[in-house]
Image (cartoon, rainbow, N blue to C red; front, top):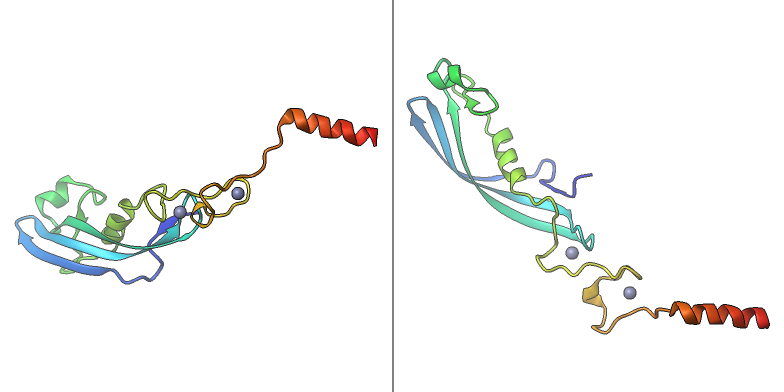
Length: 144
Ligand SMILES: [Zn+2]
Ligand SMILES: [Zn+2]
């Protein structure tokens, strides 16, 4: 399961400049969009938005670039059209963290009770039974 991603069908905001260069069209600018996910430490929902710089060249058909590069490396013009969406989506996805957190210093959950440390008092702890006493209480029980 993906911990974080761009929601399906989400609108990406584009602020792009298209420049005609000798080999094709250079697209540069920024793309911003919403990011939804789950904090890797506390499972709280993450609702961020990201702004990602992009610079992509879309080569003309039959240009030198077209002849010498792979389609994976450099995009291609399709006639007069550019299909920007895959590259932009990739650009956003590449900036996403592999271990998303709701915030940088998320303290996570108490491993004993699963409550967020933010919601617990600073001195929160669970009574630990000392193994020696645990043995003793067992002894008491057999005597009863
Ligand atoms: Zn968190
Ligand atoms: Zn606890």
